[in-house]
Image (tube, rainbow, N blue to C red; front, side, top):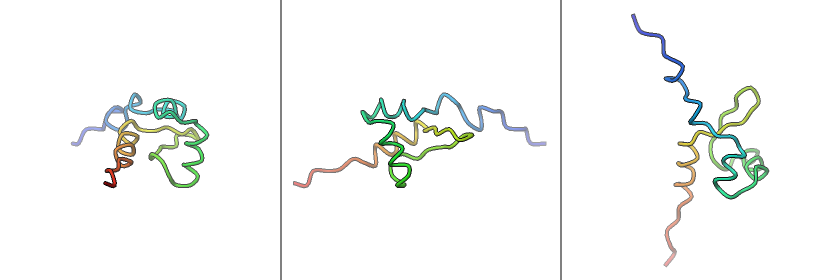
Length: 72
């Protein structure tokens, strides 16, 4: 019989950040993140009961995708 997944198997709350946390880390305002969400830009996010949270891994992936090589 398969075991029921433990809560920490589904989501680890320490892996989630608030918009204010992400804004502080990236040097942006929470308003900028809100604008980006409405435009479908920026890091991926999760909505939990109307609250927006960002996975650390999603923010890291998004930042890595913003990397550009020099044009020269």
